[in-house]
Amino acid sequence: MPLPAAPIEDTTLYTDTHLYDTMTWGGCEPIYLDAALRSGGPVLELGCGTGRMLVPMAQRGLSVTGIDQSAEMLATARQRLTSVAASATVVEGDMSRFTFPESFAFIFCAINSLLHLLETDNLRSCFASVRRALRPDGQFMFDIVNFQPAYLAIGPGERHTVGEYESDLHGRYRIEETLRYDAATQIAHKTFFYSAAGAPDFRLVHFPLRVIFPQELEALLALEGLRLETRLGDRSGEPFHSGSPSQLCIVRHA
Image (cartoon, rainbow, N blue to C red; front, side, top):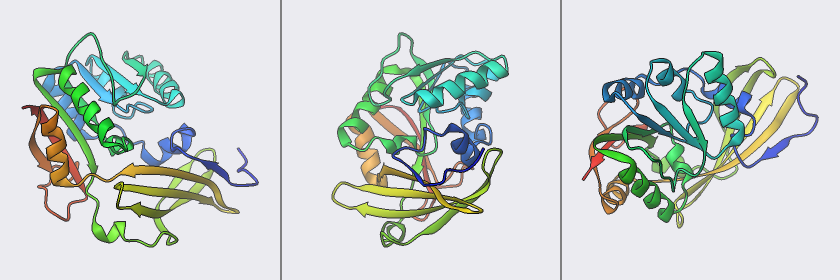
């Protein structure tokens, strides 16, 4: 597939599902799969995307439901489920406000998806929806970036490399990033620049992420009747400290 002659500008990572999967696809993170299997299900994934987490859980026989706002991502998830003869329920909807007829033993929101909820009211609404949908002995797990002050202070015109990836359609490509942080709203406005041989900046993706600081997060959960049981520093299970790359949170009813 030839690369575009002029840059494609987009406001979401999630319209080109092929490029997204080449950045992220690697199967289900073990910490989430293990927790889902221990719960026995049913399982709810918030921001299920193209099925990276959802599909392996369904293959293990768990009752799994996924919700996502992107029709393109959900179409890919359904194709992926069909290709491995696995069954799951995938729903187009808003993870900040949801209801389901059943309750869940395990609810999760992986790899920064929660940070797409930019407003405090939306975060609180999501947590309230989780509390209503979570069984009394259930577990809610998510991981978000533990943003560091030095990163947020990067100059808005300064690019740094995110990574290099391989695509069947585009060949080898590189992603660079710029960041403009608005401290008043706690929103990090990011732009990804995709480049390949002979096609610099063939795609530009603009997207904002909410910055949630550790003590703020605990307070927001408590306001909606949830209790932070454990906070880990990454998806490998390392203890949390101020320099940890992530906040991986295990949450229960208060």
